[in-house]
Image: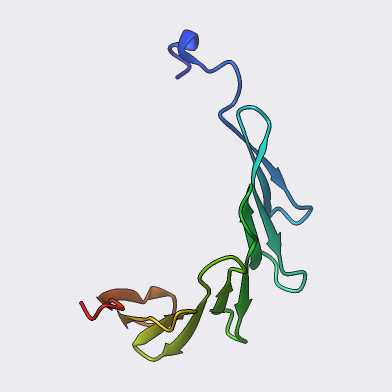
Length: 121
């Protein structure tokens, strides 16, 4: 708060690095250590194809021709596939557990109105 400069941190809490196209590329913590990184599709500006937290495996994404995520791939853990229908999205993990998101609305204005969990609840 500029009204109380004595309360300002001595160093920024976080610092960001950007790609030449203006996409978030890296996040650094207060000590300057990189804590997160992002990779983007060369063909589609802003489409994230991978991200990583420091010390964790890289998570990758695949998309369909409409720009929707079809797979989230984690080599060290659960991966997910996404199937899109008119009013629902089915998400299946690599252990074959399935969740369904029921949606209402059109195009980019769809919202989730009901969620079926893998345990049936």
